[in-house]
Image (cartoon, rainbow, N blue to C red; front, side, top):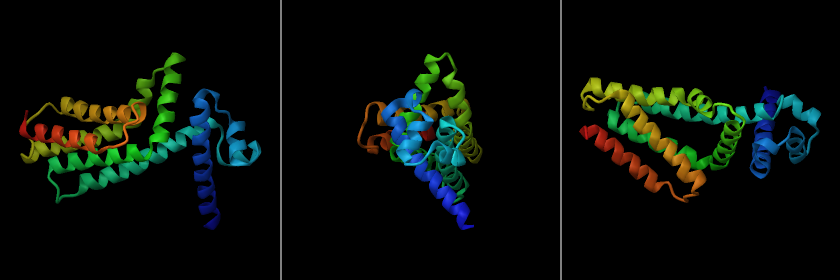
Length: 199
C-alpha cells in the first residue's frame, strides 16, 4: 500500500514542477526533458509516471475537475438547501477552486490558444471537460423548478447564464489578474437571486 501512496505522492510532485515548466515555457515549448530536468530526474524515470507531457497536462486537469465535481455533488445532494442556495454555493465553490488553481488555468488557456492556432477545436475540448459541471447546474435548476423554489425558466438559457459566470471568472482571475474573488462571488449571488425571482 505504501508503494502506491509514494507513487501518487511522486506524481503530484512531478505535476507541481511540470506546471512551473508549462508556466515558464508555455505548453508548446515545454518538453518532457525540461520537465524531467526541473524534477531532478531522468526522462526514463519520468516515463515510469507519465507517457508524455500531454498526459501530465491531462492528469492535472482530471485531478482538478474530479475534486470540483466531488464538492459540487455533495452540495447538490444536500437536501437541507433550497435550489437558490445550492446554485449560490456551487458557483461560490467553483470560483474558490478557480482562484486556488490560477496557475493551472493559465496553462490551460495557453494550451487552448495553442489548439486554436493549430486549427483544432478548443471549444469541443472545453465542452467535453465541463459537461458534468453543466449537468449539475441544469439539474439543480430543474429540481428548483419542480419544487416551486424557482420560477419556470428556460433551463438551457439559465445553464448558459450560470456557466457564462464561470467563464467570466476564469477571464477575470487569469487574464486580468484580479486579486479578489469577492466581487465575482457577489455577482454570482445576484444572478442567482434574479433567477429565483424570475427576472
